[in-house]
Image (tube, rainbow, N blue to C red; front, side, top):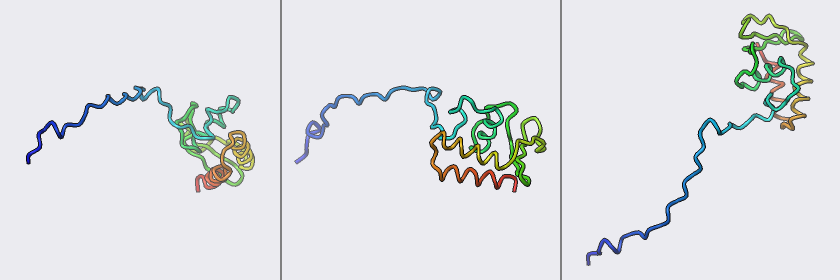
Length: 124
C-alpha cells in the first residue's frame, strides 16, 4: 500500500540555536606557554630571542631572523643586519634564562629541554 507523504513528514523541530558570531579578529589563537607576551619585564632582546625560538611573529624591531651558536657565544642575524654580527651573550646565560623563564611560566620541563636543545643546535 502506498504511504501518503504526510506519514513521512518529519515533525517541526525548534530551530537550532545560532552559534555566537565572533569575528576572527576577536578570537585569539592559543598562546604558547612561554610566549614573551606573558612577561612585562622581559628585555626587548630576550623577547626577540623567544619569538625566534618559539617561531612566533616578531614583536621587536629589529627582529631576530636567525641564531647561531659559536663556541660559548649566541649570535643573531636581525632584520637590520643579516650577517650574525649581533653578539647576544653567553650560551650558558641564555640556557639559564630560558630555564628560568620556563619555570616562571610553569611550562612543561620537557618543552623547556627541547627548546634548550634547539638553541644548542642553532646554526649547526
